[in-house]
Length: 115
Length: 116
Image (cartoon, rainbow over all chains, first blue to last red; front, top):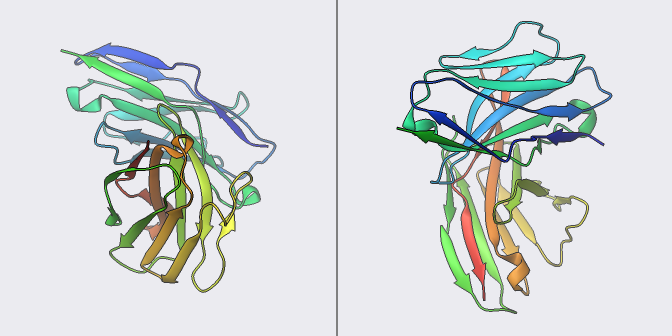
């Protein structure tokens, strides 16, 4: 079964600094997608970034980038120039056609941003 | 993106009663899902809401406890039946929609349920 592991229950970062959130996953598939979702206190889940497994290039969205290591099954999220609005719960998620394209979520990491 | 609304946004219910949560999407979507997020936990898929047929439930979830309706491509309901305090959770509606070349998944704001 596919599993997604986020080993950091909570992280803190100073405003304007950089923070990296870790995620590992377990799969025997070669075709899959990985995602980072953000859930602020308002509860609205927001897609931050996606990565297709077949792409070697790491995805980037403005201040958010990933370090995708396919062989190691690692998918970390780097947030640069952290802002107070980045404070939220961050979920790593996996999806593959072999698993019915259902999203499988990690346990989440609470990110706190200090001013 | 997709605009998804849920009603109610929160409710406090008594043990043994039932609550129906509504999910409305701003345009037609093929795939609709219901998730549960227990306090401080991650999201767990309850079921896929199928238009015109019975929902597809994940392991650990049954129709008698979580009946789902999907009368059309923009609307679905989830009922939490015979509630107990263990059902206290956030329930989220989610849809999948094609955005550019990707099948993206979007989430509603959630319904916070407290069972006393």
